[in-house]
Amino acid sequence: MNPRIRIKDIAEKAGVSLGTVDRVLHNRGHVAAEVRAKVLRVVEELGYEPNIMASRLAASGRPTRISALIPNPDADPFWRQPCQGILRAAKAVEHYSVEVQIHPFDLFDPHSFSREARKLLDRHPDGVVVPALFLLEATRFLDNCHREHLPYALFNTEIARKDESFVCYIGQDSYHSDVLAGKLLNFGIETGDTVLILHLEKEVSNALHLVSKEQGFRDFFVSVPERNIRIVEQSFAEFDSAEAMEVYTARIIREIPRLSGIFVTNSRAWRLAGCMEKLRMPHIKLVGFDLIPPNVAFLHRNVVDFLINQNPTRQGFLSIINLFNHLVLKKEVERLQYLPLDIVMTENVDYYLKDRDMQEIFV
Image (cartoon, rainbow, N blue to C red; front, side, top):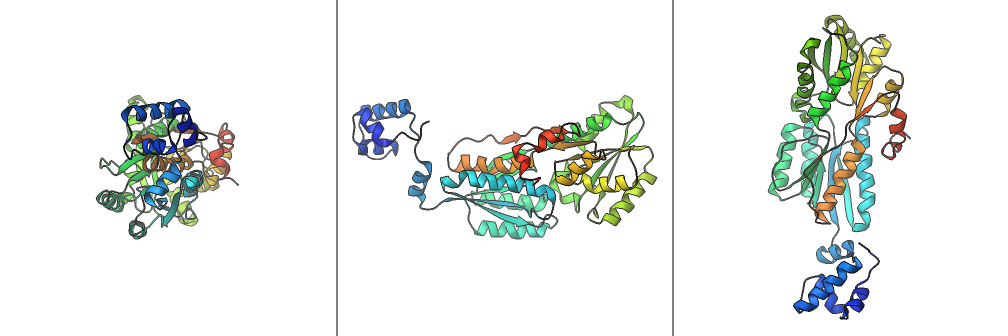
């Protein structure tokens, strides 16, 4: 496609008037079949690309509006990354007359999610981007989107949706990310040891991203029965209290025999790592998710052994771009878009930090 080709160029090469070309391109008015075919042939030869922004504005009289319903990026270091991706995508599509508005909600308050969701719907956007963190509230919100024929893209948290308003999901394959966590821990433990699946979350039962977070991990160790690994699962809601976290860490060491590995199921491995470092627990292997600054700091200090990078910045970016493709370019969008799961360790972390997606996070 060549956006520099003008309608005037098409008219001259086809030997027709500007008005005829306009009628063919916009499919209006009467044009003889042979003339239409000739104009379309010239359009294809020249690689003409219409001005999408101008044509949409002429048709609708207003910009395309996309709303992003996401956790407040100041509340948790992880959410700064998808927010950066969303803002970068907003900049990339703004010249197509696309407006992106962020509606932040409290990461730990499902009622806050519902309040912001109602405000968003009252604004009548053309499309929505959302991570479906709270199972009940997210389901109600997405049902409302479907009733209002409002296209939506999901990221970070996959939820099974088959309605016509569902455009795509972008993010990790949770099951295989958990299988990967099991494989990584398997390298550092002995036969007959115990590993802990740890949810550092306020309300696990309604946290959709954690509901299915164990199965892949458990299935991996089922596949190696000769290892005879015992799996324990726990949740701890007071992770934001350093004192409570330290007491909890000391307790699991006392109470779980032969504990040699811990899998933290979200981006908060650093909360546990600080306590492990203070209590001098180098024999316990720790696997977590995501290249947020505190996780990377403990990776450098060899307290965290592996981080599984889920590309959250790219998730935010692609969620906007895919809605743009659907709403503006009218392109068919692949519904399930699983991103690669990168294994990050001390030896290769600097490579990832040099990546463009991460540069804005570590400044």
